Image 1 (cartoon, rainbow, N blue to C red):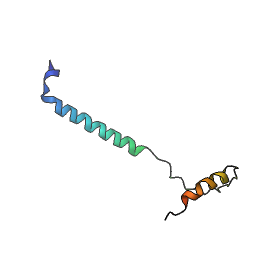
Image 2 (spheres, rainbow, N blue to C red):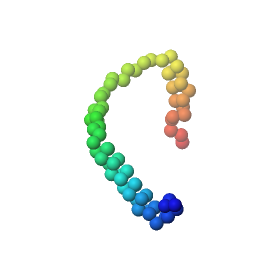
Image 3 (cartoon, rainbow, N blue to C red):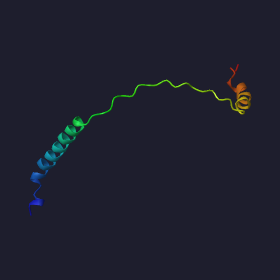
Image 4 (cartoon, rainbow, N blue to C red):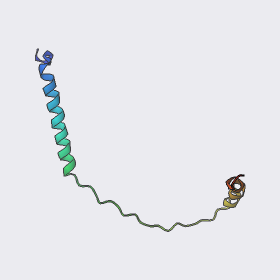
Length: 67
């Protein structure tokens, strides 16, 4: 049975890995990627929420410098 002869396994595995590596490299090189999108500045809309002042009042003393 030729499958049990392990003398050719290393060359077979090496050639398969090398072939797959070359094929994937060629496939990646042939693909075209879109241009990087440019950052677009969007105006930030400040919405007033009724709970903002409540949270600010609660957490403002914690943000003061401590002695």
